[in-house]
Length: 180
View 1 (cartoon, rainbow, N blue to C red):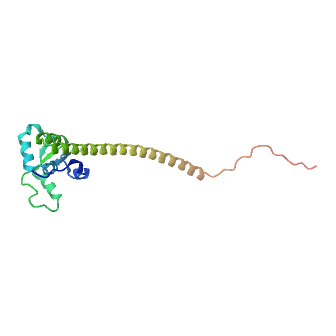
View 2: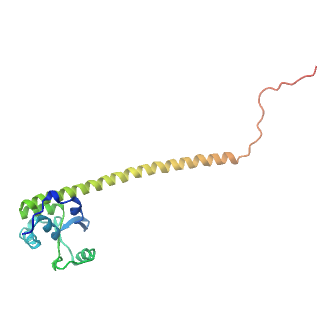
View 3: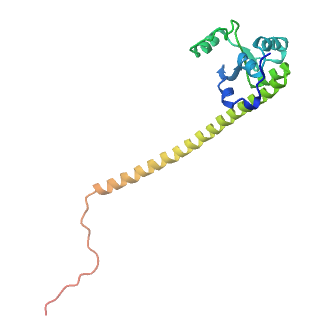
């Protein structure tokens, strides 16, 4: 069995760096999860296969050869023995939670809770970024309308300046000086 890692000392950045996007879903790979849970990857896969009914397609899927090649191409140096000849399993947020249930170790439960917290934080960040984008769009629309209004005002000023000033008809009374 691998050395236990306390979930409290696992920085969120370590977990975030182990999250990938496949098929439009944020997932973590079996090898990364095995490392974090403190178990061997083959043991993790064995438990998944024994409890396959707990892992529907939206919880866990096996990467295709093409997806695996894309993944491997992201790593410049392939460490000897790190990459299995078998295709990796990819676990969604729900699959990770289910995985801690089948592994049944204290570390697996604690680490999976930490991972779920990171997923929730990522989702919150994405939503807040979307809200910020919506607010920026609203401001841009207001500014665009103001730009158009200012442009109209300057056009009127230009038209007024281009008009030749016609002599104005004098109004009022004239006092004539009579000679006495």
